[in-house]
Structures are given as C-alpha cells and as structure tokens.
Image (cartoon, rainbow, N blue to C red; front, side, top):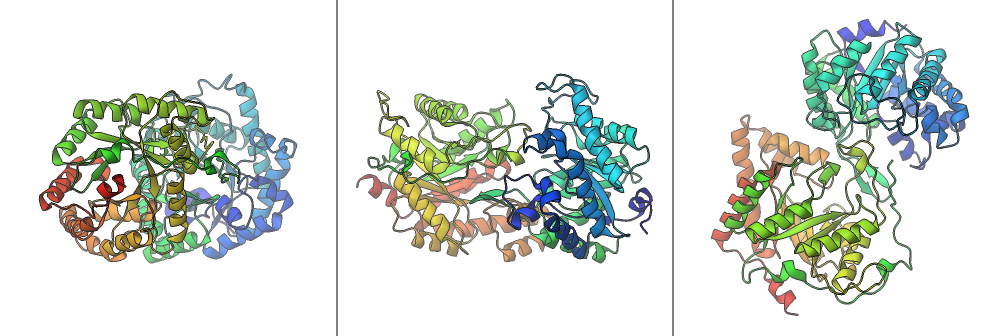
Length: 639
C-alpha cells in the first residue's frame, strides 16, 4: 500500500523514472512518430519500458502522455482519441506499478504559442496564434480529466517554458481535483532562469501559490544547469520538496539520432548535490535510461536517504553539392598569415546582450599578444548571442586582425545563408567556418525552430561556389569572394574513421582548413596528424585551457565530442583549492602545447568561459618560444 505522497516526499527522497522517448527510440521507434499513440498500438513496448524502470529502482512512473493533448495529437490525426490515449497510458503504468509504486500523469505544454511575458498571471492567453484562451483551457482540462479519471496518484506538469502556461495547468488541475498532488516543473536552461529570464525561485513561488505541492525543474541543458536551478529553488525553505529531472548532458546529432554524453555515474554524483539542496523527487529527462536510474538508486543507497524540423538526410547522388568545382582557393585568411611562425586562432564568444566592450578589449589584447585571427561562434549551443559577422567586421576594422565567422545551417534557409555570405564578403570577413549547428531544442529561445536546408557539406559547397563567382543556382555574382573556407573536425581516437571520412568529403567540397574539438592528449594529436596526412587541408587542433576540476568534469560529461583523461580529472580533484587546481591545469596545458606546437599546421585556442586573459598569456608564451609549426601553411599556399 502506497503512503500518502505529500507526506512521503517531505521526509524521504523518491526515485522516479527516466526518459520515455529516449527508451522508445532506442527500441526502434522512428523519431518522427507520435510516441503517445504507442499506448494503443504497441502497448507491450510501453509496458516493458515501465517494467525496466521499476527493475532499475524507480518508485514513481510517469505515464506516456506528455504530448497527449488535443492540439498536439491533431498533427498526427489522433485528436479524436485524446481521452483513449491518456487513459491507456495510465492503465499501462498502473498495471506495471502494482500496489506500491506511484503513477504520475504526465502533462506537457499545450503546444500553443505563448509569448515570453514578464507577468506571473494569465495575461495574453486570448488570441494566441488563433487559439482562443477558452480553447487552451479546454485542451488542458480534457487531458487532465482523462488522467484523473483513469486513477493516477498525482500529476507531473513538466517541461514548461512559460510560467503563465504552467500556472494555468495547475489551476485547472486544482479545479478538477482539489487534493491531487501536483509536481510543477519548468525548464531553466541557464543560470537558473527560464527562457524569458525569470529566476527559478520566482517561478517556484508562483507555482506554489497557484496550488503545486512540489516545484522543480526538468529537461534544460544538462546537469550543471539543473543544479543551479535547484540551488535557487532551495531558498523556498526546507518544508518545500523540490523535483529534479536533468537531461543527460547537451546532445549532439550523430546520423539521425540525438546522442547524450553525460555518463550515469557523473549524473548520480551531481544528483547528490541536488538532494543536499532540497530535491526530494529525482529522476531523469532526455537521454536518461534505466541504466541511469539504476546508478541514481545506488547513490541514494550510499547516502542512506530515503523535434524541430531537422533534415538529416544526406545529399542525393545527383545533388549540386556533389558536383565537381574548380580547385578551392586558399582564401584571405590563410594567405594573410605571417610567414615562418605558427598561426594561432583564438575563439571568443559574442555577448548574449548588446554590451560588446569586453569582447573588444579581449580581441585587442589577443592581437597585441600575437594572435593571427579571432574566431567568433554563431549562437553556439543554440544560445542567443550578438551577430558574429557584424562583430567580426567591427574587430577587423578597429584592430586590423583577421576574423573567422562561424556560419550555421541551423538558423537560415539557403536564401538567407547566401545573403549572409554576401554580407560577410562586403564586410571584409577573412574566413568562414561552416557548421551544421547545435540542436535548437536545447537552446534558450522556446518556439525557435532549426532550418537545416543544408548541412555543413552543403554550406561548404555554397561557399566554394561564391569563391568561384557563382551562387547556388549557378548565377554570375559579378565578382568573386575570397574566403578561406573552414570545416569543423571532431577527431575521436576510439573510432576516428567516420569523422575522417567526413573531413575528406569536406576537403573535396572546398574546405581548406579545419578546426578541431579540444584535445587533451599529445599522443592523440600525433595520431590524428598521421591519420589525416593524406588530406590537402590545414588542421588547427583545438586546445581548451582548463580552469578547475569542476570545469573539467562539465566538459567531459556534458559537452559532446570532448573527452578529458580520467587521470587528469582525478589529479585536479586531488586538490581542494581551485587555485591549486588551476596551477595543475596550467602546467598540463603548457606541457601539451610544448609537445604539439612544433608538429602542427596551426593552433586553435579556445578562451575558457571567455577568459581571454588566459589565451592571451598562452599566445605570448608560444611567441616567446618561437615555435613555427611544421611549416605546411606557406608551402601549401605556394603549390
């Protein structure tokens, strides 16, 4: 017999389940399929999922009904089965749960377009994208009523980005059943704030006032972001139980799948910190599996406490980007490098606001230190930042230093991409790094959608066309561009062939230089150089100067494509003071640079947390050492 949920959660930690979509997709369900309809069509698969989570240690199951409201089901032609799908989802979970495991009815956002208002009320509900406020209320009422009638023990309102919408769902739940326990989770993607910039604490207070019993956060941008939100919510006091359902890190697209990097053990350690901050209902969101939940359970026992539209299809056999082009130009960036010295590129992030003075100061200091080019990302990690091409032009004009602008396929269709390329040419940009772009779903702008008319291959092809004086349609541009075309390269020592194959294709399409993900091993750099020696492309290995043990853990577990040796992470954690950790990290970076700089075409330094002082100091030390690299830059340009 289950104890009263509200009483239990105040005294003990309750382990919930993990992601539903991740599990089902791993079992072969197509990513574009409506997973809620599986409650009717493939109920055995849904039931087995619940059973696996129970075997892993879950004591609370969430129903497979997150998107089972009329507005969302309408897109799959299932609106008339809304009640049936919800009740079937509850029945499957109840059957698996038996008599001692809680079943929570999962309710997600309505699917209506809510504005990013600053009011903690219900202003603006009427007339949103043609949806009358009464219709939206009816959508929530229909789904919640179906869940309650089917016999759920509680409701979990999850993945809400808009406080107004969450408050509406809470109030409707209370109208339908006054004493039903309600867990209210919002998404706080960065610095403990919602996408509208509302602090988790403000959202938590409003949700409690509206009638929630437990408040917290789910989804978002990984473990560290979740911990910040829970720490903010802890100010509500010890009497308020909190909920934490983090994603398994920040995902990357591999083939047709989203891959989440955070390992179960890493997440479990962070979960301990969330519990210390007041989390009493813990589980997992996107990317988590029964393996994660099992690891979470071990951690609890040790403590003895209770789809945006993405076109991932490769180009067809007769696509334009596979047609032969003239030989790629080296471009303005590479031809502008000073002879007989190692080229150094340094990355800075454009600001998330209109204050650019800090980035400009950093660029000036880097130029004085001897950096050859400043690299500027375009909304990296799908977080909104100032336009990188405008900022690159400003740096180029004011400081005379070359600039590399990253250009993402995510944010524009081919019309917009070509217009942006022409703008970059007119503004004197030296190099463009062609990138596909991080998934928009994990960014900080709800309602935004990825475009992906082309991926990085197609963008490299377009840039090469522009360097030849033609646009994508083959029309004469009445001039030519002179970009050095760059490609991203994620070398993975454990399985390098797929990424090397991708780089071969990018070079064939017109890329003349590549910038890699950070390396933390000189041996890995040497292996990479040996494996890519056949390519007519300059490779700039990425180096990220670590600043602390926590920084190393975050990069290793939550940023796709970055692997930091366990021995280094252990050594950093062996020192308690951050200052001592920094000394160890600095020493490691200097030794790594000394080992690789004489061997490479050029160097790509990434300013940690935008701390340009660190990369400026390293650049000065490299210049003082007089390293020239392997000298391939000049010889390549003279071929």
